[in-house]
Image (cartoon, rainbow, N blue to C red):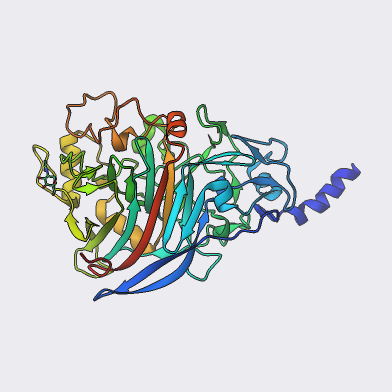
Length: 459
Ligand SMILES: *[C@@H]1O[C@H](CO)[C@@H](O)[C@H](O)[C@H]1NC(C)=O
């Protein structure tokens, strides 16, 4: 009786939530990027990257050390409900290089795939670009009528790996302002969402995703909860040394939308999702040019390259509808135009337009959720609201990355147009093999530049 009275008094005081730990100070690795103007003059800005909250140690209380989450399971006492878990648990500052294999130098970011550290092994990572001079806000990019350029070194990433650089419509402050349960915010990498409506997020909208949590059968560090976090996604770059794709994904909701049930589009309900999970991808190999990208290819993945992506609007203004997404490469001082589609029944497109998406989905007999959810126009609407830059390295427990670099789906013959996407065998890409065979893999991104069309690169 007495104790419940005391608890009743204490709880309101304790109910600040998803706390911030005090064991390790959070220091974002610094990185520079450039903002360019018409004519090609660029201004270098000093900024930083932040590690996503999912990778961080979550423990009881701000200075405690009892785990809230161990391996791939929550402590059911500390985390008896989504809000109790957020009130009871703090996420910690990160030892970026020591624990997570994340380092920066000038304008370069290196993400190691596997990092052995004093408490075990880290696999993969995901970081966001911060606003220059801010510890509390992500940099927001408005891509329409603009050009985004970066360098990639994919030479140390083989089959099954994905070094990804992309934009998602995350909240600028990580959701700290909208959800009182979130005391951590962008400084601790909260607020992730993407067009797959991922269920593996531990924290969504200031609550822990503990309801119906299922530890992964194959991933000792991951699981899935009842809720997913959906939002529009523009994949500029999903790549390894064998294959690459750029892919817009639209959603019928604005910003981060916490989904539950059918609208998440899990399994057989894939096309009932609020987001277009397939996207409209341009992968040169899949689109009929098998010698364009790869080791010693026209774009040679043994060497560093510059990747340019242009977002063209109907009327050539920042507010016009997004019409076309164009790609160029620069390597060894040469500008390399994107490969042209070489598929019977298709026009020789070299960019992503709605017409390309309609034709590709027809000829490949794929679902066209991208166009059903508004196509480039609706992708551009998300860009106009603003998107956050994500860089990550990961292996794929669900589909072994075969959709990027091998033949996929496995129930279609390899000879069917659109099935073969790269030279990796269909037996490749199991994360346990990738972790053991490519333990030294890493993704390098650098030289980020943003500005009007034609301002960010030269031959
Ligand atoms: C692939 O792209 C390169 C460079 O644009 C071109 O020279 C070559 O003819 C293309 N091959 C096919 C099969 O389209």
